[in-house]
Image (cartoon, rainbow, N blue to C red; front, side):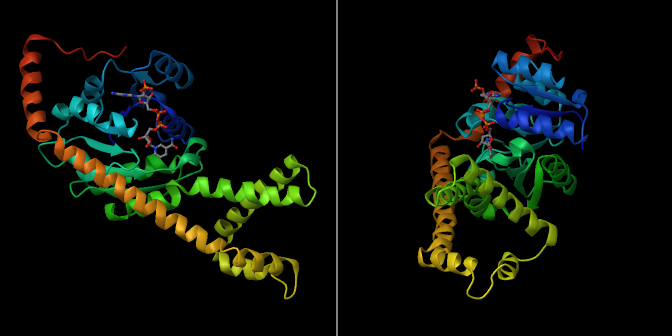
Length: 305
Ligand SMILES: NC(=O)c1ccc[n+]([C@@H]2O[C@H](COP(=O)([O-])OP(=O)(O)OC[C@H]3O[C@@H](n4cnc5c(N)ncnc54)[C@H](OP(=O)(O)O)[C@@H]3O)[C@@H](O)[C@H]2O)c1
């Protein structure tokens, strides 16, 4: 991986990435640069992790060739317009922006960029995430390896096609919310049956955690593990029958289908908005020319804060 790595946006995910990368030993704090407009966040990250802020996104791009875009989706156009003139064939852009398609990002650049689209989920904030990675057509194998190394520091990674990113969003992206709902409902069942709320929640959370760990540790299919705990005529079979009657499995399958569909719709709306901009690429070209002209007069500061 090309060092240093530059993180655009020092919010929740920018912090999670910084923490994971340093704690896993992948990089030293000195190998991580970031740009964050909020001075409180900037100081916090600098103090907590020893990473260095830059004065601007432009400075970040000039100092780091591996860049991670970690801003809210609505800030993406602003950031891309700012950095596009400075992105060269040596740069790799890793975007974690949920629901922002690769083609949309590519439309801000006059040439094909080396890009990896990553879709992590919220447990990445505690290094227990599941991240899907999709390389752009111009990405090199080493770009994907670098992204895999970065996101392994936040949990597990899988590689998918860009066209599968909506399904990833519907499954693992939205998945933590489904599981929170499952945990809440199971715990409520325990409370109805007379358990104290905290006891019910502790038992449920550990049960879900333990069951997930058992699948990972044994590498057995969940249906096999389920069969192993079902005695004919026993309590678990009675519970599973009630779940089946309530359409539990169908409800979860439909949740993934509905969220995938919504992700597709949001992506399409974004593409439509992009096509309404008066030709983004020529804008970028004009901006690039303007910036080049200005840079003859203004010496761009390359120093860190
Ligand atoms: N949180 C998750 O678990 C999760 C999971 C999957 C994907 N994601 C994706 O990760 C991205 C970041 O999410 P987040 O939760 O970390 O958001 P966040 O906490 O709002 O962090 C974004 C940070 O970027 C800063 N920012 C705004 N404009 C900027 C600019 N022009 N240049 C550099 N930084 C700028 C924001 O500052 P201000 O506050 O001043 O605007 C903020 O501190 C999103 O696109 C989201 O879809 C998040």
